[in-house]
Image 1 (cartoon, helix red, strand yellow):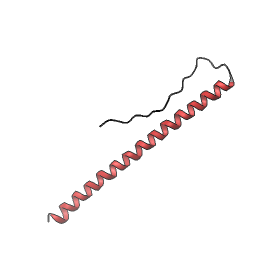
Image 2 (cartoon, rainbow, N blue to C red):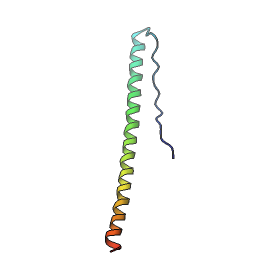
Image 3 (cartoon, helix red, strand yellow):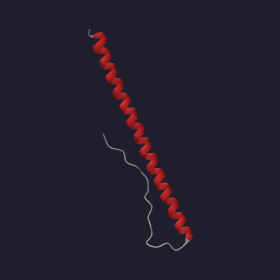
Image 4 (cartoon, rainbow, N blue to C red):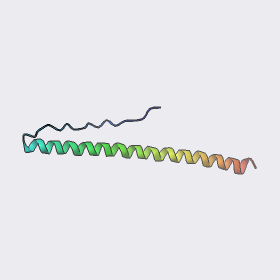
Amino acid sequence: MFAPSHSCSKPYKPYQFDSDWEVRRFRDEVDDYKRCIGEFVEEQEEAVRAHQDAAQEAIDEWNNFVNYELR
């Protein structure tokens, strides 16, 4: 198995901004980067919950087997 990684693009901050447009554009790129990272983290947290639920279901199945069928 492999660990997933995000495909978000980190914005490049210029040494100096030459116009207000460049400042706004950079801020928009920062916002896009933050949103992308947040969405990736949320997807990974959902996957963690799904795996935890699957593990708990397997444990419950085993416990029911032991408690009701092996008695």
